[in-house]
Image (tube, rainbow, N blue to C red; front, side, top):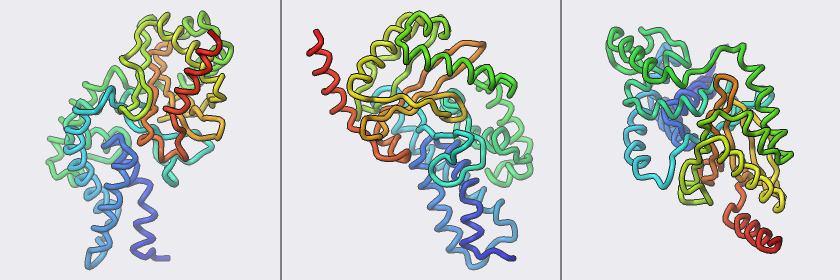
Length: 309
């Protein structure tokens, strides 16, 4: 049966959203790009013969324009900027909507921030979506040879953060399970054993939620901070739910009303946790459900701590 134009767009929407998210690192901005592409699609006098190629090209160029504007805002961002988290549990569909496409880990999305928009677009279409260079060239409006060179440059620049082989996933999941068990038990020594010596805890509150004053570095410092933080959060009924975030082990922190307080993502390499990315900026959590009042929880936790001293 032939699809209507609306049905064709809805069928391709998950792909379009995924491309836009990987180009922008933002759910809200990706949705804006998809919406703009939808307006364009429905304004055409006739549907192109290859709907996917046409929509991919329009979406890619729209997202690149949005990325150029976003780069200036991110340069002035309060604190450390991290990508908006997506839940990618195998048994769930990441918000928003169906999303059958893979999601790059936070560490790689951060590496992509250093690329120019055109370079990033070529890398994403090649590395994540496996388009051939003829399709990529048509999408970005550049010759195939130039696209090949741009992709090669991007691969070199992101080599250190690239995913490890699939065989490592089982070991990675087992290490994450040990991490959350040690966290629940308040076992700082066990946490240190799982952390790389130069492990980092990186937070993004965007000035809109309590956040780290700076990145915490070193296995002892990170383990000590995490154990004290979890003990404090437990006193105000915050729970830590292990989840898969951006295709890597992570967690969703919820308050007593089941509202989202934060996400954590673990960057596991060479048998140790190298970085924990924590997002508390409420603007970056809204797509995951109702968001907790982090400031109110912080005040309550402070009162609880003072009462115990």
